[in-house]
Image: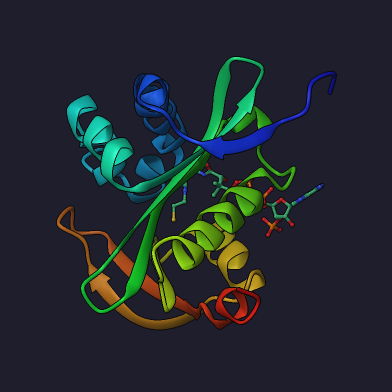
Length: 165
Ligand SMILES: CC(C)(COP(=O)(O)OP(=O)(O)OC[C@H]1O[C@@H](n2cnc3c(N)ncnc32)[C@H](O)[C@@H]1OP(=O)(O)O)[C@@H](O)C(=O)NCCC(=O)NCCS
């Protein structure tokens, strides 16, 4: 690969690229569940813009192109909900997803005081579940999304980040 992929905080100008990227990346999840109404596919551009403005949003860039994204926000209980992790299909399997996740976790712990991280994955999305377990997440429960897809909820404590502050 000639250029390297960098991770940085998303800006307002990235919202449209994030919107298009998540639409592309989550097609595989939609196909897996036979459900094209999953959240990342029906989210509006305005809603993505609002999240970029208020949440902790990171992008992976290759030159000018946004090739990955993740976001997180603090819940009322002090846990940070992380979601919509995605990497362009042509660049998957090179560790970019794990790097994005790490960037979101440290920002949420250091800047927003998250005490733990929470995310959810479709129950049949084995690659995603494997990735999350590898970086320290454990299943704590299940839920049923608005779209009807059964989800596994995973959590990981944030002490590792707080301890080094
Ligand atoms: C989930 C997703 C973001 C992961 O992104 P990614 O960049 O491929 O993630 P990583 O490369 O960090 O890890 C994926 C795999 O690559 C492997 N990998 C990581 N770094 C690697 C490297 N340098 N060389 C070779 N393989 C590597 C990992 O071991 C992992 O393998 P596994 O599937 O056997 O566990 C991506 O697959 C995606 O966009 N999926 C569609 C949307 C989606 O489902 N999002 C998650 C919703 S819960």
